Amino acid sequence: MSEIISFPAAQPRISRAHVADTVEYLNGKGPKESAEFVERLPLEWAVDVLDLPTFEWASEVLEQVPADKAVALLEGMSADRAADMLRWVNADTRTALEARLSPETRAAITHLLTYPEDTAGSLMTTEFVTVPANWTVERTLEHVRAVERTRETIYAIYVLDPVTKRLQSTVTLRRLISGAPDAPITSVAQPYAPITTTPLASSEDVARLIAKYDLLAIPVVDSTGHLIGICTFDDVIDAMIEDQTEDVQRMGGMEAIDEPYMQITFAEMIKKRAGWLCILFISEMFTASAMQAFSDELEKAIVLALFVPLVMSSGGNSGSQATSLIIRALALHQVRLKDWFRVAVREIPTGMMLGAILGVLGMVRIMLWQGLGLFDYGPHWQLLAVTIAAALVGIVTFGSLAGSMLPFILKRVGFDPASASAPFVATLVDVTGLVIYFSVAYLFLKGTIL
Image (cartoon, rainbow, N blue to C red; front, side, top):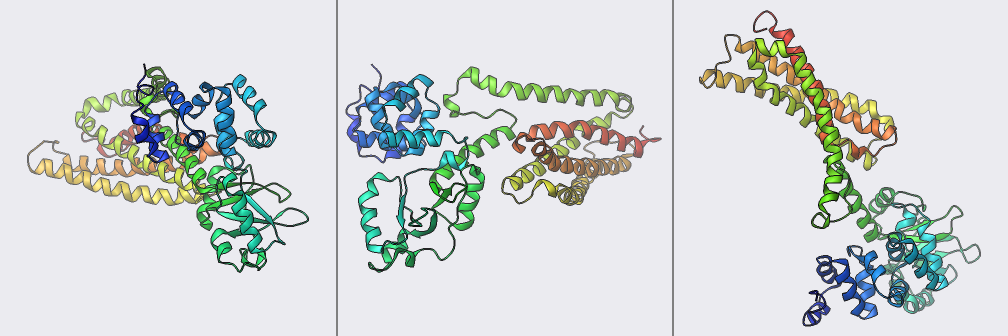
């Protein structure tokens, strides 16, 4: 018998815990155990558990609990969360469950499912409070008390035009409770036009608006100005965390993983990581080709090979830095596609200065090792030091420029800039860095070491 069925003594302990702690406990179990546990919970508590976005087995639980329980859960949950869960339920089960929902709940969920993922329409909830502009503060408060339990959250009251039903203004809860009871609701409304977004706006754009205007929720309006939902800050945060996780994984040189690390299967782990590793490995073959092209120089001056890892890693590191900066700047709309030239003009002198700093460090290292007798670089060690410094300036400059331009190129052709992963940039700079390094060495050392 599974642990979750045989631990009735643990139920009182979990029942006194915060719902987030209960979800954390269930996340450590499998979907079957979680479904069995949720099935035994009182409905209100079960709704709270499934309503939390961090519950990893929500869709699986919905598939495995009895249909009556599943329908009751969907009826009790917020519409946006219910829609998110139904996206990942198999088609037959979803059709059967939707057929048993009340017309209001089914219409709300179906409407939300029509919007693409990671848009305001997919994130928004349709459970909000609206009142006509001709109501008083007292009447509005009475209405809030009456509908409070049927709304996901009440951060603000949305005031509609009594005739057209279009969004006219917003009233924060704080302003509402401080208003005179007989005063019109519009007297405590925000003095400026409501900050809104469209249902097809990206989650990044919604997050930017919420951060800019310090909002707890932002209204979503259609093309006619009618209010169709609200995006709350907690839903946006959950979406942004998921997006950031995917971006970080892609920048690490792998496909995005949808499940927690400890729960992904071995086969899936290989599938997600092997593709990018193979691409990077094939790309690195060009590095070997570049070294073969300069094999004669290496035979004449084996000392040059000692500094290959140094110069290659420096170019890759500078490229990764630039890539990370530009990807983030693009995501925050600090720079746009049209700013690529300005970024290039900024990165070239930056790369030259960074390369010069590393070049000085490289020269000092050669001078110290030669002076202290730790290694003999030969009679032309001073010229070798200058060569390494000059090569670092060129390689770091190219790395900074390539790393900053690659996100622009990918975005321009329709790819996610996060795909400009640090390993990919490093591989690109490795190949070109070798060409720069040996070209500079040939220029400076021809007739001496070479």
